[in-house]
Length: 369
Image (tube, rainbow, N blue to C red; front, side):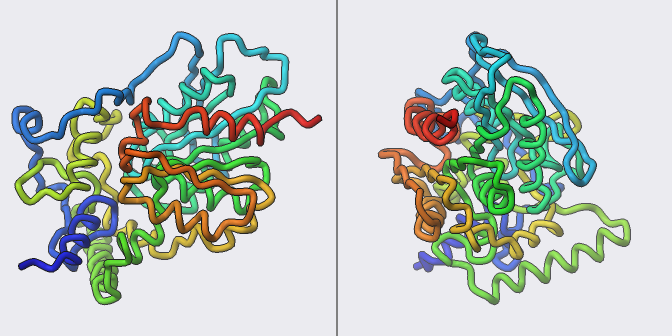
C-alpha cells in the first residue's frame, strides 16, 4: 500500500512550484507533450456553471497601461473605471494581481472588472517576468513581485481621479503573499485582501501540511544548483511544477483542479511570445528563491491597517490563510466560503464573496470625515 504522505507530497510538488526532482516528479516542460484537444476534453473535469474568468462589463471602461518599477522595468496593467465615475473627485482604487504562474487575464481581470462595477477604480497587473510585464520569462523573483504592488500604487496615486490615501490591494493565490510582503513596508496600501492565498515561501519550504522533508528540500536545492551550471554553460532552460499538460489515471485531485482552469477554455491564456508548453511553469533555477521568502514574518506590523483573508472551506490552500490570520494583528478577518475549493475562488462568480470584498474596502477606504 502506498504511503498517504508520499501521495500528498507528489500531489503538491507536481502542481504548485517546488521543483520536485527529489521525488522523481520534476516537470521538465521542454520534454513534455501536451494532450490532444480530444484527450483534454475527455479528461478535464466539468466546468462549474458559474465559472466566468473572461467576464466583461459594459458598466466599466478599460485602458491598457504601463509604468516603471524601482528596477526601471515596466509593469503592464489594465486600468478599469466605472462609467459613472466622477473623474474630478478623489476616488478609491484597488490593485489586483493574479495567481502565481498566471497572467492578469486569469482571475485578476475578473476581480478588477467586478470591483469596478462596485465603484472602485481598479488596476489589474501582470507580475514582472509574466504576461505583458518586462523581465526574464518565468523567472521567480519574490522581491520584484512585491515591488510591482508598490509600483502600481505609485501609478494610481499619480492619477488625478484617485485619492492616494484611499488605495487598497487584492492578491489572488500566490499574489496574496506578495501583497502582504509589499504592505509590510508600504503604508500607502490602506487595506489588504487575499483570496485563496498561497504563502509561496512556506509552500516551497514545507509543501502542504508540512509534508516535504528536509532531505527532500535539500535535494530540490541541489538540483536547481546543478541546473545553474548547465545554463551558465549555454545549456537549455528547465522549468518546474506548474500545471500538468495531460491527465492520467494517476492524476491527483489538485492536478485536476488546476488543469481544469489553466489547460481548458475555462481559463487558458497563452501570452504573446509564450507557448502552451511553458505557461504556468517557473524556471527551475529561480524557483528555489521562494525558500528564502517569508511573507508572514512581521505581518503584525501591517496593523492598524486591516487585513481580509478569503478562503474556501474545501480549499487545499486553506492552511495559509489560517496561518496568516493567526499571526496578523487586529483588525483582521478570516472569511471562509462554504463549498469553495482553491480554484473555485479564481472565477466562480457565484461563490466569490463580492459583497464581503465590497464592504471591506468601502469601510476601510472611506473618505476621511
